[in-house]
Image 1 (cartoon, helix red, strand yellow):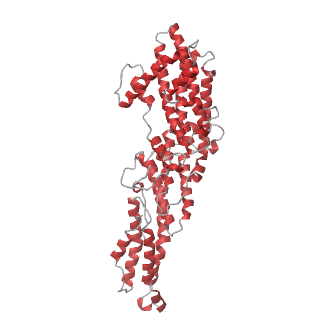
Image 2 (cartoon, helix red, strand yellow):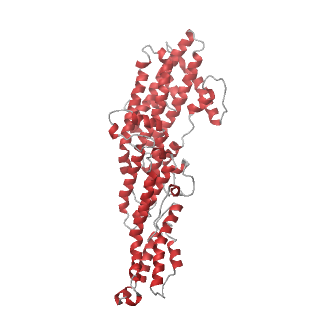
Image 3 (tube, helix red, strand yellow):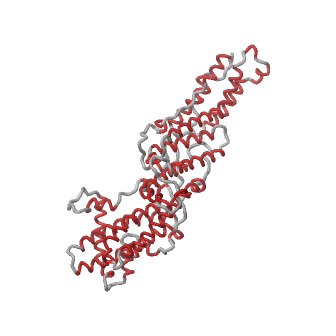
Length: 502
């Protein structure tokens, strides 16, 4: 009876590393243990984008808040990044003093020019060139949209902090001059907020793609956090009140549009998994590059999981068609991984060599499980998810043996079942051992070039093949006299130990 491989979660860890976490770089770049990689130029979000999103830069607003936030009157330890943020805030505060007169009543300079200079100081002057229909989607490539979203997010964070600090200073003490300055400050805040919201409209107008979803989530967070605070700070300067002021109303409309765009993109992700990647099959059965890309992409989504949860929980009547993000109960993450697995299974039929399809699915299932259990994805998968994949891997190994090695071993077992004295002339002419050697050479020649990148998985698969083939060969040599056998048992073991080197 052949011994089949049994996989545990510990085995899936691959190279002996802990299954509790993984480095950000390992998700989007090539992996030494599972061989997956990402193709940057053939998909909306490139490998650099994934690495950047999985390991984002320190939050500017958090750094500044740690230094100057609250009313405690003390400083926390200052890092080089924090010093840079403080320098930026000081520079913008000085610029604000020079530009505020343009927003006073009566204005002393053209507001449009002053606003352009103000936004240019944050490297976001380009928002003024966007039209209301989201024209950046047609003018900028997707990577450029991603870059601008990053710049915009950082700029809005610092801008919000500058307005808060200046508002606090101008209110102490309150007099006519302070009131006039607060009014001008409110006008500048209103103009800045309205201009910055143009990017939100542009992102919402982009087509449904994986990169659009990440951009929408990245924009959703600062809009939802910054604009309510600005509205409260300057509501008294707006005669109609914050609730009906055009900027808060525009912010609410932008958030609603971002929610719609994000939900539309989520519903389109299964189609993107199936169609938006170049499905060229690796001929060595190794991990397909799409596995590294998509598993990294799913982690990117979860980096803003709170916003994603709010977006998916928000209602537009499509809850039945939009999967939820529920920790520990499956939902969106489990559905997307299942879709990826289904596409891999479907495409594996293009690998016609006996056993190669099973090796391909074994490699890719192993890579998916490894990336899931070693990341935050595990929190959003149902109980028993990993064990079910381990059972799939066991079935792939069994099927691989049945398809690839059982026909070869059967050349020996059929001959060994007959006694040597009773062997027919026809059976002797066929020479079962010669037929076995010929089939063995063909299989080893092909499978030596197959790739099993994970060292653990490669050892398991080799040992399984050895346990399946070697005992049958040994029994044949013992039961049927073959003094002229070309190989010893040790020779066969060495030959089979060279499989899957790629």
